[in-house]
Image (cartoon, rainbow, N blue to C red; front, side, top):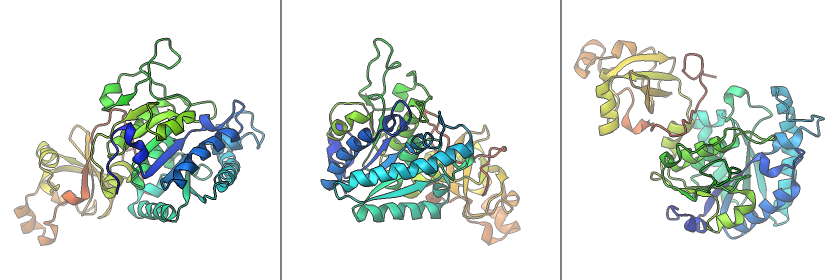
Length: 395
């Protein structure tokens, strides 16, 4: 196991790297796939792979590569049109990657994901196993959102967020986000006097930086989604390099290009990462101030005595949100009880439950080993599929 990467100069020591490239870096001005740009990227990543490193590539570009061959003048805005373009473009994209990596005798494999693949623990685990086996066998996984099938409520929204989740899932040493600008600037890059921010140690330091949420004409996202991705990664112990695609070689060599986001915590366990960032929440437990303090300050389990109310329909073993009476989310956890069982337990002490309900109700509602605190995020990252009531919907 490699030592944690905390400084950009250490990036050449990373043994497992997730690299994400956006549509703006892979398409020409007219929207067609920029094959020379794709091959330049592959040249660098192939060198890393042949040097013994494990590389995962998260690549946009399917819809951008597919809409013009279908006769569209611009990227389609309707769901069916986007899905058709993704189906056509994804095959063209993978053909190019297969050929480009093949020149180095490197095998690639396609992994198309939807948010549903991360929401349930069993599917999350299966996806992780697929990545691990591919990497063990020396293949380069090429990942994209399954835009041909994903519905709006089960989409990651952009590949920046997907890349952060993949980096957590494969326990990458670093995440490299490639875009069309050389990092984060203290003002819009085209504005006179704008300066590149070389290092971000805490997301709070850039909370006031003016950025756009708008992506390119042939892509989605924008700088906001890249900052969200960086925060998701760094808060789970994964450093992030944000730079332009032409700088990928220099970035992986540890040179001072782009913006380096320092990890703000130690490496989280995969299960904790899943609970905080990827799990679908099926219900909500509202707790009083005493329970909040016990969870935050003492790392305690959640007991029925501290729960004020329950909402949503869930079964024992389902993930639930734990919120304050003001509605602030403080934790995610696995419930030990069905939602139908909990109302009779609320506010009762252990002695009261033993007397009225029996010993089978004496266990904690959420055990501390099945609970992770949720920290407020600077970029306000929102995860999961949410219904009208605010509780995610069961599929």
